[in-house]
Structure formats: C-alpha cells, structure tokens
Length: 302
Length: 251
Ligand SMILES: Cc1cc2nc3c(=O)[nH]c(=O)nc-3n(C[C@H](O)[C@H](O)[C@H](O)COP(=O)(O)OP(=O)(O)OC[C@H]3O[C@@H](n4cnc5c(N)ncnc54)[C@H](O)[C@@H]3O)c2cc1C
Ligand SMILES: Cc1cc2nc3c(=O)[nH]c(=O)nc-3n(C[C@H](O)[C@H](O)[C@H](O)COP(=O)(O)O)c2cc1C
Ligand code: FES
Image (tube, rainbow over all chains, first blue to last red; front, top):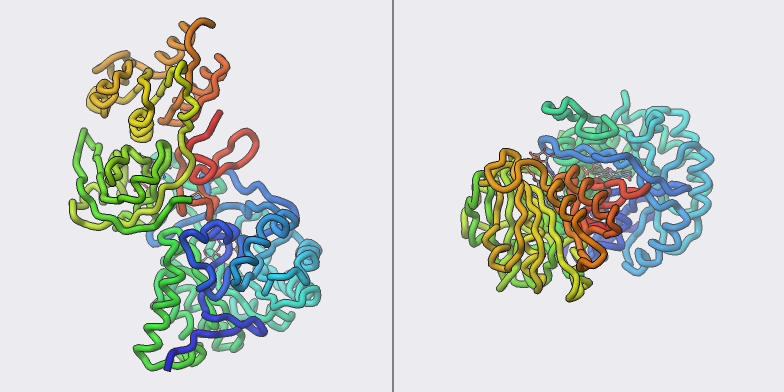
C-alpha cells in the first residue's frame, strides 16, 4: 500500500507535513520557477504587520558554525499591500497558505486578524509571538500577553490559529499550555534562539543590530527537545522546526511529537530541500512499513 | 527568469595570481543565460551558506568565475579538483545595461580588486573599446590586463605600492580624467565594481559631471534571490536587496 503523508493541524488538512517556515522564502510567489510549491504541505508567509516596516540596518546576517544569525527586523510591505499584491499570486499556487502576523500590541494583532478573516485562500494564521528582533521584549516571554493575544485572535478568526513560540523562556511547556488553553489550534516550535557573533578584527558585532536569531542545524537538538517536552505534557498539535535540512531531520521531529514540520534556513542552502523532504519521508515510511504518517507522531520510544 | 539550480562539473580551478583563482564549470544553459553583472550562488563544501560570485566569463557552454581566497569558503573552493561536482544557482540579480551604450558613447570601467571579475565579462560583451581605470594592491594583483588590451581598451592602472602605474587611488586618476572632459567630448557610460569607498568616490565624481554610474555592490548573502532580506543596503532612504534589486544599481 502506498503510504499516506496526509496530516492535519486542527481543522487544517495537509497533503503532507512539510511547510515552508516564515520569512525564509519571501512571500512565496517568487520562487515558483525553482520550487513546485504545490507539492508541499503548505507555506507560512513572511510575517506581516499592519503598517509596512523598513527592517533593520545592515549587516543583517552572518554565518556561524552550523547555521546563521539574522536580524532582519520584520521588513515587510504591510497587510494591505500583502493582500492586494501578493495573495492573488499565492492563491493561484493551490497550496495551503498560513499567514504569519505580528504586532506591537493585542489591538494590532486583532486588527490584523480581522483584516485577514474571511479572505479567500488563507487557511490559517500563525502568530509570530517570538520575533526577538524588535526593540521591545519578546512577547512569548510574557505569559499574560501571550494569553491575551491568542485569545483575542482566536475569537476574531475563523481559521486555525497557530502560536509560534520563542525557545527563550524558562518553561516552554507552560507557555505552550497558555497558548493552547487560550484557544490556539496548535503551537509552532520553535523560532530562532537569541545569539551574537563578533568580528575579532574590527571588534564589532557581525550584525548591526548587535544580537539576532540563530537558525540552522545548530539549533535542531534543542528544537526537537522543545517539541518532545510539549508533546509529552500536552499532546497538542505541533508544527516542529529548527534546523531541518533532510527528511531524516523531519522524521525526528515527527517522532518527538510534531504533526507537521517547517523548513526555514535550509531553503537558502538549496531551494529544492522541502520537496526532497517530502519524497524522503515517503521512502522512510516505505522502508519501515508505515502506512499512515500519523503513526509516527510522538512515537519516540523513551 | 532564466535562473536554475543545478549540479555542474568543474573543468578548471586554477591559480592565476597570488591568491586568485579562476574557476570554470561546464554549464551550457547557465552560460547562455548569464549577462554581465549577474552572479551565482556556489555551494561550497565545508561552509554552511552558499557564497556569491560574479560571472567572469560565459562562453561556449562554459561559465567562469574569478575569486580571491579571503576566508574558509574561498579556501575550500580553491581546493576543489577538476571533475568534481559543484551545486550552483543562477544567474541571479541585475546586469550592467550596456545596450544603451550608443555608438558615440565611450564605456568607462572603474574597477578595484576582484571587482574586475564582473567588469571583465562586461568588456567581453561590449563591441566598442573604452577606458579601464583599475586599482589593486600591487602589480601582481592586477588581473586580466591582457584581455582588455586585446580588445583595445585604454588602460589607466593604479597600485597601492606604486609597483605598476599610478601610486595611489584609482579614483584619483578617474577624477582627473573627468575633469579633463569638455563639453565637446564624447558622452561617457560609467560602470564600476570594487570596494565601497571606491564606489562612493566614483559615483560622487560622476554625478558632479552629470553622469549616472552603474555600480555593482556586495553584501553578505544567504539566499541570493530576495527571500531572506539579509543582503539589504540603503539606497536613498530605502533598503534594497543587493541580490535582487542589484547587484548592479544606477546611481
Ligand atoms: C554579488 C556578489 C558578487 C561577488 N563576486 C565576487 C567575485 O567575482 N570574486 C570574488 O573574489 N569575490 C566576490 N564576491 C565576494 C565573495 O562572495 C566573498 O569573498 C566570499 O563569500 C567570502 O567567503 P569566505 O568563506 O572565503 O570568507 P568568509 O570567511 O566568509 O569572510 C572573509 C571576508 O570576506 C567578507 N565576505 C564574506 N562574504 C561576503 C560576501 N557575500 N560579500 C562580500 N564580502 C563577503 C567577510 O566580511 C570577511 O571580511 C562577491 C560578492 C557578492 C555579494
Ligand atoms: C532570514 C530569516 C528570516 C526569518 N523571518 C521570520 C519571520 O518573519 N517570522 C517568523 O515567525 N519567523 C522567521 N524566521 C524564523 C524561521 O521561520 C524559523 O522558525 C527558524 O529559522 C528556525 O528554523 P530553521 O532552522 O529551519 O530556519 C526567520 C528566519 C530566518 C533565518
Ligand atoms: S541574499 Fe537573501 S534576500 Fe538577498
């Protein structure tokens, strides 16, 4: 029997569990010449905000062992232009579109949710609660704010709401629980780790914003652990990601408890990676005689 | 867009100067699609992110790059042997617009260091000859002079140590040249690639003479195609992406 890769995040059905992570492939409409986006489980757009944001001064990125640090600063064209200029092209791709949003206050999140509600072609909303690059403190470190935002957006939105959390918290399980009880459909684990690198010749930070977010293979074991902790405690639907480069990496996340996975930085190394992960997952299932990918979720033998 | 993501075979990877290497790969389609000013992202084994390199030449199905060994990535790249395969993505970015160089216009190239790579490709594709202003550290760091001479370009060379040509900045020679232009002189089309300070001096001097220059910028890159927004540079009061809005900008 052919293995089934179909999975779901609450009411959101996916043909396969592979999602493009927010902020790592633009708005998704511009790499269709290199990637068969329709073969993926879905895409999570670059985070959009109410007003356009110019982003941080350069240099914004640097390479470190096993990954990279970025401080893009949520550069984006704003919700209105996104809906007008980008969404029509995305819709035409016939793939699940999850729109990532961020704001500076509960009100901003809610206004965004209203603006997106009922718009054809939007299958879900991911709340970027964890962007470490805004001058203010990371929202995911403030339990009250997380609860308020998730509750308000869940109420304002008819599509599944996914809370994307920062790993930089004392207790990721507690944060995930707050998000789930406030009404989130799922949690997305995890965003980048706050990090820093210094050029020893100039004694300057390698990133103008001084600190940024670490992504890539360097963070994978910590991301797998976060997924496992949350799954073990809550059995919540989880989008797992952080450092996924191969199908084997994706399997690890599924075994730890993720129902879907997100692929970010790997897109820079090779835009063909997400598709290779889809076919690699199929081969893995065939090799181990797994008929339904859901059998894998959380099946780590501890 | 004519870019593709392929694995190609290395034909040559040879030292052509102290720390400078010419890399030639077999890539029919990519060579055909490449235009002067465009670049490729090379997947160098041993380092994490791909590295960007301008097209140095593209002819008969062969794509060439000219790079300087400056760190781990270029060091590993230089160790790769002919016959081995290399992942490359491109061609990417904007190009030098030289179709606009009308018969009466004189192309003027200002190059610093490895900036010569993309400008070499440009000179190969412009039918008329022009003037090359080229600065480097020493005589040995001045590359591909033979090719420019063969195409009858007039050379104005500068080195930091005076081992060849003018001792000092190439931009001083360029400024002097501009100052000598009169209203009766032929119009100029300026193309420049090199260190940031050199480019600043070129654009300021050209602008003072009412000339728009086409300059090629560099920045740290991750994706090379506008997806990560990591390669931003400030142009006017806006952030532009070097990989997609550039690398060649009109200023
Ligand atoms: C569009 C574009 C075209 C380029 N074309 C050429 C070319 O034709 N020939 C050539 O020799 N070099 C070119 N470069 C620069 C080349 O990409 C870097 O020298 C290379 O990435 C360094 O890699 P590394 O691992 O050896 O050095 P690293 O160890 O990463 O760094 C060594 C030094 O190089 C600098 N550097 C690293 N990456 C870049 C980068 N992407 N752009 C600029 N500086 C960087 C670092 O700040 C550091 O000072 C180009 C860069 C860009 C953006
Ligand atoms: C350049 C860059 C930009 C990113 N932009 C966003 C963003 O706008 N919103 C967001 O929620 N996450 C953003 N992320 C985080 C990724 O979506 C992902 O959660 C993180 O990088 C870890 O996964 P990875 O190791 O597979 O990249 C960004 C990451 C990178 C590297
Ligand atoms: S390198 Fe990613 S946007 Fe330019």
